[in-house]
Amino acid sequence: MSPTNRTTSGRTQRTTLLVGIVLVILVLVGVLLWDGRNSPYVATFLGSNVATTTSNGGTKQVGQATYTCDGGKTITATFFDLKNPPTQLPDVMPTPTGSIFLVLSDGRSMTLPQTISGSGVRYANADESLVFWNKGNTAFIEEGASQNQTYTGCISASALPGVENWGTFASSTMGISVRYPSEYGVQLGYTYTQRGPDQAPISGVKFTIPSALYQGTNLSGFDTGVSIEQLPQNTTCSPNDFLSASSTEKTVTDGGVTYQVAHLSDAGAGNFYDETVYAIQGSSVCTAVRYFIHSTNIGNYTSGTVKEFDKAALLAQFDKIRESIVLGL
Image (cartoon, rainbow, N blue to C red; front, top):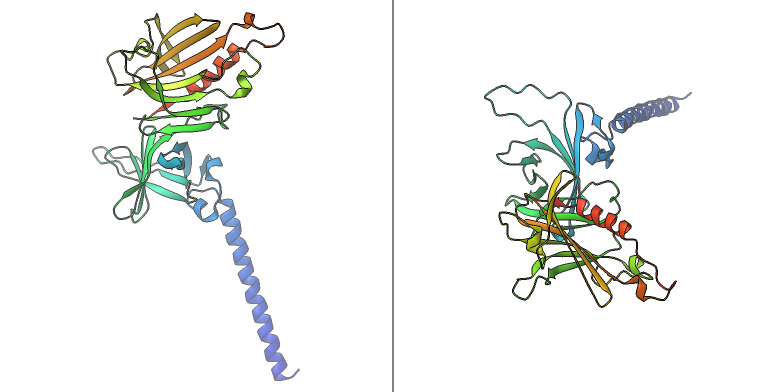
């Protein structure tokens, strides 16, 4: 073999060996990254779904929340903490050990470490150019050197079983979020005006039933639905404050929430009107949920032309809406 051929052969062997070593390294790195794909420290790089992981490495998932914010923006937050946090010394400010994985509706995702905060819980990146604040059921995001709020008025949405595919309404003005069946209508700027001419209208939002629930039945779709209404806080937050006439009140606790409940019925010209008001006790602004059901006398129809609506099923759906309400601060 000529010297030129031997030199070429040696170069080829070295190149092959180098390529082989690089491939082995890449495979090992790939295996390590895939094994830790759901770790909050590499999830952003890989784009994996950290929310499905309960623990990784030295961390464990301690919570998850979806926030609906002003302008239709959303934040999905998964909270982590160390599985074995260090012992905090007495009389020394505790060192935060948590982290958060955020998925924003603008397409960004990131992991932020928890930082020291005087109020609420604070997470920030290294240069403080993005800060996530969480307090109770509310949150917001600040960005840039001037710390402008880019995600504002965020309120956590209910994780109640059975409402996963429902729509979410949130209002930072009302300080609430609520889940509702996606086929329901939403009346923004709704006001209740039936308390009488000397009483001011009550503002809120109303969710109206779809045609599938009332067509072919004696249920009216014109005004039947669930509304969430608010009055300035008073000492009692009584359901009778929301009704046109006083009615017997009772205390009901459902899902850890205490309500004062009152009911009114009325009838006229073959129409029946049923109202039930659940006034949420302890709300910072007196907040109440009104069930309004308008039906007609089934006896006024020719037999077989109209069926009687399923009141139990309708109330069960109204209950689910009420139970999904989350109050802000």
